[in-house]
Image (cartoon, rainbow, N blue to C red; front, side, top):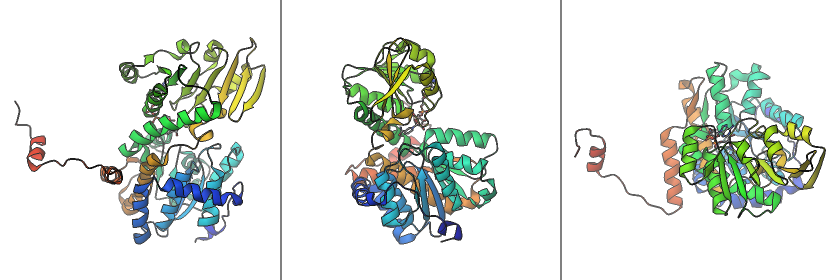
Length: 425
Ligand SMILES: NC(=O)c1ccc[n+]([C@@H]2O[C@H](COP(=O)([O-])OP(=O)(O)OC[C@H]3O[C@@H](n4cnc5c(N)ncnc54)[C@H](O)[C@@H]3O)[C@@H](O)[C@H]2O)c1
């Protein structure tokens, strides 16, 4: 261990939660066969040996499995939360107690603690960063510039992070290469769609215990997360309305059988509103003004900026916490609007995040992308790169095999046909 990492200890809620975390990591691991295969190889080959890797991710049971995999690959890892409300304290405890991994994350930490924890990761002088939302990378680029030349590369987990990093690259301020794990097909097609789809329903139901069937559910954003959630809400019997700003996505939603309209028209009709856009103020003052009594609003996009919470607080004459993750705001005319999970990702705040089966794909991408950076560091520029196609295909292949699914292979004749332009009718 380097001097910097020896200085690290941890900042977690309670070490005695480790036993619970151990069992939950084991349970999640049972549904993560691709990551397990990566771990088995990493254990033998140690491709990350001697590298310091600072991770800023949601501290969940699946992340626990990823951290153990990276350590098995020889990396010195340290982990902090990528969201103040998404940490599972038992997982943090298990990683510290059982695996000697420095973790800085406490569920419900305030903003100052959140950034203190990010800085604790940077204190270990990471050579690789693994980020979810780009708060670690942006802190490094704004407040800890002196150590940036030690970083050889990083990975980014989510859509919002990739957007931020691409804008850093466009402004020519990005100081090292990043692999956009989010943009792997085996990531967003499954994690963003099926993972967010199921876990957002899970978070809303755990927070409210309301019946989805017959409810009018308004979904802002018909990207990968939005379409996953809309599909699952429809499956629960909800009347789903989509709001969009992109003509093509709006058209797709309409042809998928959803009603599409502007948020201001949906506002008086909706029972439950969910934002999944990565954008700000998608639900704003004039929308609150039009909502009916008892409306429920929540967010499953990365940051807590999609709902204008400051405005809701200003409008309210009374607020009270009704149950865990439900805060009621009473407006001057007596209407009540319920905000879930402080406007933070509801699937991680009130539920457990994505099921392990999809995080298996995302985190196999993370582990293999880290190895790729080490192997290719000298040839990579200060840009945002996609995950190499061979990694994507390798992961899909392993996942299919683990599911007992075989597929057809192209014949030589088919390969020739698919590569020719001369053969027509
Ligand atoms: N909850 C989770 O666990 C989880 C998982 C993955 C991604 N995310 C986050 O969810 C967000 C969406 O990710 P994605 O992969 O679906 O992105 P995406 O780019 O595929 O989709 C976002 C959609 O929102 C639309 N949009 C933008 N502004 C809008 C507005 N004002 N009103 C209505 N629609 C608007 C865009 O046109 C786009 O279609 C991001 O912040 C991402 O980081 C969350």
